[in-house]
Image (cartoon, rainbow, N blue to C red; front, side, top):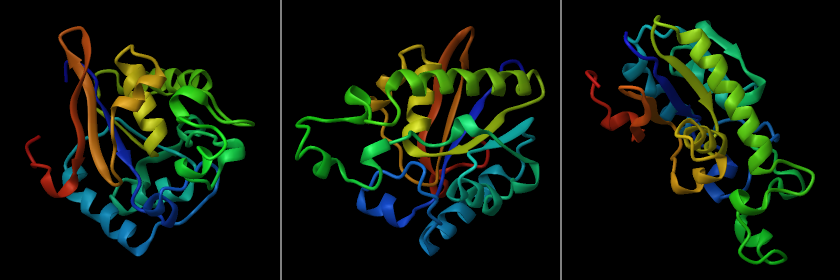
Length: 200
């Protein structure tokens, strides 16, 4: 393998991801639907020789990793935990905007929680850890959450974590970060397992 790849895998559906509530430190389980989504990731990952598998310590990411078939290889990575929403934990964007018009997590951050700058520092740390693990041994799989993975991809591209606002990401999807020559690129983004070709 000439250049490393980072495979980003968002966890399956939870009750709060379904109704738009910001889920940071709340350790919610997957819905049965989320379990099914996670299992559908397994065929796309089964024959990949991953150099390392890193997962957020929260159960929705760990469970997705297990059901996708990579749990035995996984190591917890605290920096992959979701954005800390602080005072906005469990609220929807519409609820937050009742008091902070035009609020977004990318532009305003969260009282008693993360800002784009604090999240970018975590993303830089994850990227460094993943590249060190990859070397020339194969891709690294990262199981985590919507906002942190969007921020990580934007950080990978050199755009800063706040540019994650440009990258929509569904539950139980596969995205791949890599290189074109020496330039960091997105090779695949927001691909459902059902649409993933074995040769990709």
